[in-house]
Image 1 (spheres, rainbow, N blue to C red):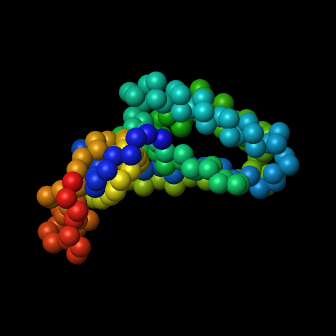
Image 2 (image 1 turned 120 degrees about the horizontal axis):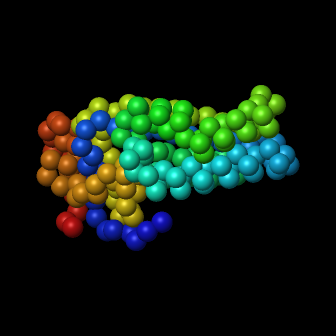
Length: 167
């Protein structure tokens, strides 16, 4: 995952962006022939996205549990995300295969959520963490001064409720 960076940090990303949460849920564990191809398809798409930053993909984190794989993805704009979904050979092939092999039979569940984030309308904090999430997709910066509290990161003003430890 990366080296732990002691201290408090936040993310800086100029302009609006998109948070896209996508995943799959294995509903019938023994139906390997149905869910393994779905799980494997994401690898090819991620390789394509990381190799072609002009597609608007900023980065992702993946999370795995017993029956579910979830990715939090960051995109430059909804237009970039939609263009990829509708025009990428890798994505269209995976989508067609899913519809043909699984369709509505219930063996594998899929989901996504899309959030359009206006410039400056987000806040995040990473304490004693590797560069992660939005900070990995954007810029990893110290959570000090105007970035010290959640309210300050959102453009307001207040004092920390608990003193911030020295860096």
